[in-house]
Length: 71
Image 1 (cartoon, helix red, strand yellow):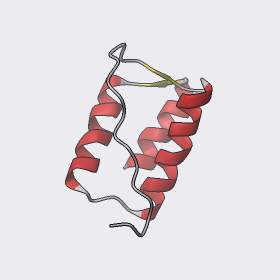
Image 2: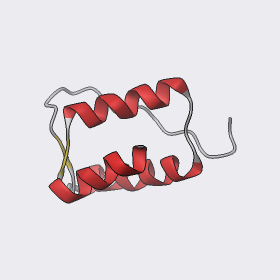
Image 3: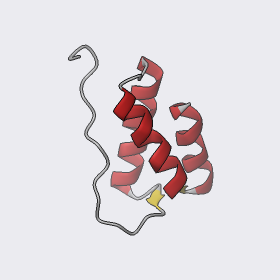
Image 4: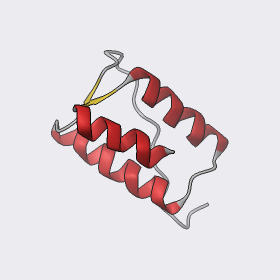
């Protein structure tokens, strides 16, 4: 599901509030797959460089990614 949400953000140029919330829920459940982590890494880079912007204007940070294999 995360890759689909990330793809939507790349297509629109924005990470919606709803998508951000769903990503947070998935991360809270700790049910991420390798493809989820790869998609999140690409999203973080796009957010950092301005290719994608957060729809939310809150200054809340996205959750930190843990390196694969550090679980």
